[in-house]
Image (tube, rainbow, N blue to C red; front, side, top):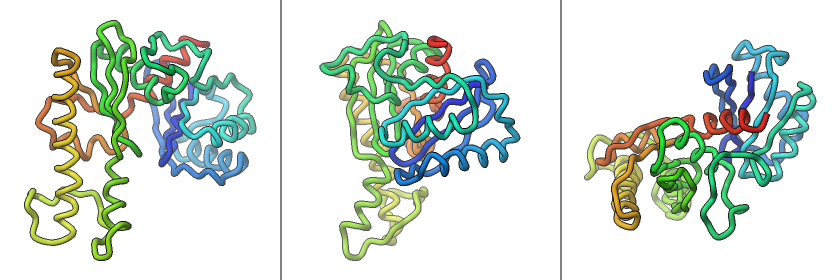
Length: 254
């Protein structure tokens, strides 16, 4: 089993692959003050819950946008298993080119999403990755990363409403049922859900206009399933693109 780990700003997502099959996923909160011992304990708990014996793990591949946690996670893994650990970054084979000003600055999660989309669905493609930030990633006809638009994430916007105002409460991210709502909580839900869906539709049109043609759109990330169903554009949902890309990259480098 290959263990794929996506370290994000809000969550760390784990996936176990047997060949091309994703056999389990798990998600924990990102905590920059956790030690390697604590992350090792979390890993043990995850494997216990999913009935995974640590001896089944033959390799590990990591995507991280939180550098302080990367080395800690590697140490936590080394406590449990003696296997090859690949961290997506410079020198790692991905199979795609990075057409941008500073290729080393492209986030590992973005690279993984591009790799998965190109290999699973083909190119060109537009990827909407809805995590802590909402990223709209363009993959060219040749399967290269062409650039990205980074937008404040759904939860950042929602939390800003309650933190930055005197009378707006914290609310759950649920469909209010209508755009023009009748109470404060539903009004906030409407603005965040329908507002983000409309923003995505509008950004897709802008990207089509700049790229010169319409291309397939794919959505991933923890908040994608909540928002994209309210978009008017045709969008294919695959919440595990980063994990799938990690597995592909591991096979290219092992």
